[in-house]
Image 1 (cartoon, rainbow, N blue to C red):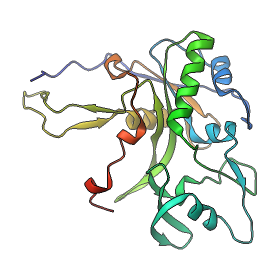
Image 2: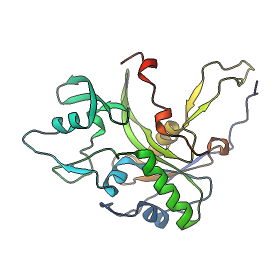
Image 3: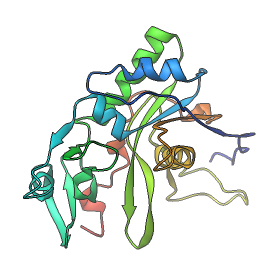
Image 4: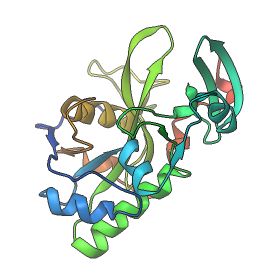
Length: 237
């Protein structure tokens, strides 16, 4: 059994202002490196919106039919409908509103789709920052999700690279020495939510740095699918 470990001295959440409007084909890693003072061990959180823009995941919406046909096209299963709101399961396995399609902060008549593979998007940014700019960081692609039974939205990770998505604390002990039986922590979601505090919804800041993250949480091979509960374990589907 592993004993409880001390908490980190401090974690900083640093906004990265000054990025230009991202357009299809832009070099996101280059834009980030040019605007941020990155250090080895940082976690770079990038919003889905700018990743989708750079990867040209923008589509036109027919004003006469709206976004519903697009939501159905981007979904593998429709779970609930209420008015204009559709709760669906995406091709990535995410259960979210309107298949993650976003109409905010894009040109009128357009919508931003989720990246095809957000883990791959995160890896590309991480690899470019490491090989071209000489800094070893982890990368999270974040997006805004609602939550069952709780009002309000929060940011979660939809892609990651260089970071263990879930930290398994089973077999360790709590502060009073009791063994933890079921505790698994979605570290990537916690970091994404922390980063959103300085990025906001209307600040125009699509990138943040989270500094001081426990080095033991870093590692290759993890994907955000590790956070998504399998249907057989999901009590609500």
